[in-house]
Image (cartoon, rainbow, N blue to C red; front, side, top):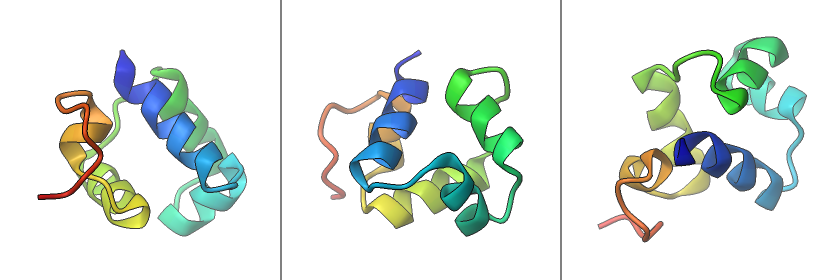
Length: 71
């Protein structure tokens, strides 16, 4: 699914490693790794936090929209 690639790409675009992002989200690195690999569903509160952190829409992260712009 495109969401997993997008959250990885956004993290890398912001020069963050998984451990740094996990600390920001207050979760373990292994949990975040499972989100990126698609082994664990990303909870809505994490999607919202990622959206705010990266200043993109949740629709963009989910692959519903091709535009990262928040409207």
